Length: 175
Image 1 (tube, rainbow, N blue to C red):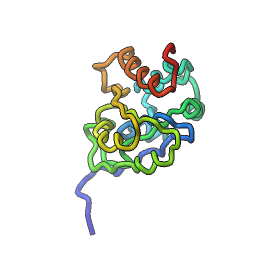
Image 2: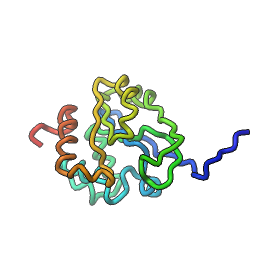
Image 3: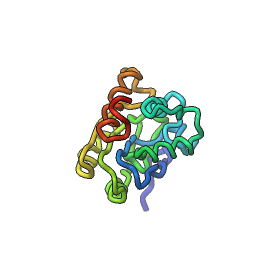
Image 4: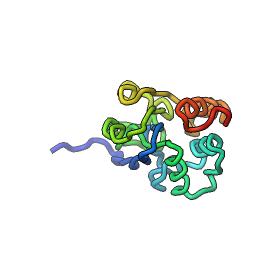
């Protein structure tokens, strides 16, 4: 019998938010404490994920209920998941993730008939690019939307995200 020497709880992530129209899959690392508590992706109020998508899609997603946000995201061809299915972590920082168990990314992507690309939301997620790059025609590393990524302005993040969304047909070039 194996006995864990860790005093940290084993955390389980969220299910994928994908649909048959998913063309671009955004992969974070692992949900924050706020996201796990709310059972919603990017639930921390200072995370810029939903404000970025609101700007890209020109829809006020931040004022909508979570279920309505997901409907719009899925209709637009965007999917959301994380690279890790479970881990141990104190707090919400990626640097604190230990004993990470990867999600079944290959199986998920195989079930998405229109998938064209994966975009990693931040550096911890991008550590799995050697795997994800073999699953789709294009793989991108995007600047993290986390409040911990304060070195990138919102405008700079928006431009990087816009380029990827345009290149995969989620928004028009003049958007």
